[in-house]
Image (cartoon, rainbow, N blue to C red):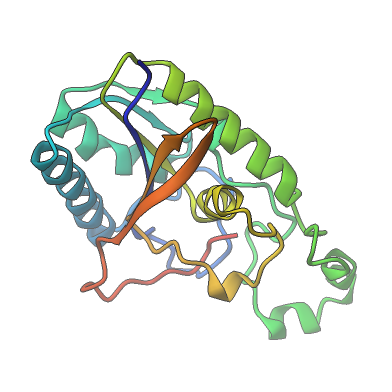
Length: 215
């Protein structure tokens, strides 16, 4: 029997004093609050699975520093190693390292071209490609254990692509309407030959967080 449930955790708040879109840039670490948020997410998973009589038996994370740091409390809670999976990484984005604001783009006409097709999107990795690699990683994770739960630590847009895929909704969307807060947990179960979402928890709802810099 494969995994019972898959828990997708978004990383915690990032130390980003410049307010740039950090994307795949290295060295963007969690803030002090981000570390506390990661601990809260790990505690929530631990209490939930224990209350339901299960255990977390495998932990995977994106290779970026902020996700590796966010995975650490889960590793400590369950005595697990963090397995790095490149497919869980943040999408690439042409605006990486820039402040993504109207005023920034307005005085840089050469950037207009990258905004030509928000349905794709034209500024970065296509939504279909993100969804495909994430669903493949989830499928492999589900099949990689005999029972128990698997935790996957990733980023906002990759998790949103999973949410939209399993719900049968179009992948093109308004980024301002995403439901994937920092340190949130999206839980999936397998129903027949498909994954379905069975839970979403915003573990940082009571924190005043800075969430800027996501793709």
